[in-house]
Structure formats: structure tokens, C-alpha cells
Picture 1: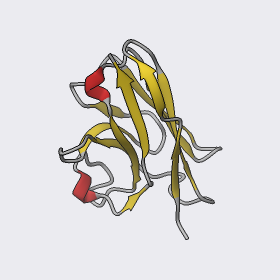
Picture 2: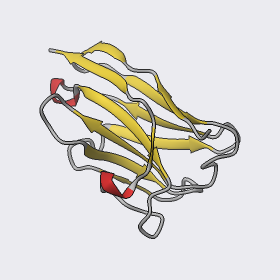
Picture 3: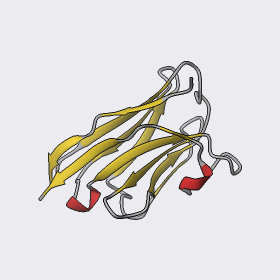
Length: 125
């Protein structure tokens, strides 16, 4: 069974940092595009960051650009999201996703079939 498992969420004060991890089971998605998305209460799931198979290409939502960094370690089959200068607006459940259907690169949640269970990030002001 293919699994994506997120970890690293928690409660942090505004201005603080967290690092999220997303580990894939076995060799699944080792060389697939991976993305991070988030969903706040009452809002739709939104794109946060995306990274290609090698880590050589990344893209970010404007709201997190300059504060968040996505990276990956293919030997560990894990993708990371380093989040700095956190704001209360970053409070959400964060999900990782893998292997988008559209040309292997998409910022649209509905292009992904494989998701983790989510990890809560709460930023207190």
C-alpha cells in the first residue's frame, strides 16, 4: 500500500519556524514530483510549494515565497518544507501530495491522487 506520511507540525509563535517532513513508503514516488498544500478551516485546499524529481526545480505560492523552502532527499524518499517567519495566516493542516497527473507538474490539488493524512500547523500571534 502506497503511503505518504507527514510529520513535524505543531504550535509555534508568530515569527518562529517549523520543518515538515513527508516520507513515502518503499520506493514509491522516489523520483516523482511532490507538492505541499494546506487547508485552513472553512477554506479550500491551496497550493504551497512544489519540487520536481531531482530537486532542481521548485515553485512557491506568492504568500510563502521567501519564507518557505521545499527540498527533498531521494535516498530517504522524503520531502521537506522548511517554514520560517511564520504568521498566523499560515495556520492550517498541511498535506503532502505526489505524482501529479498533468505532465508531472501541477499546483492544482485536483491533479493529485496520492495524499498524506495531514499535519496541523498552528501559529499563535
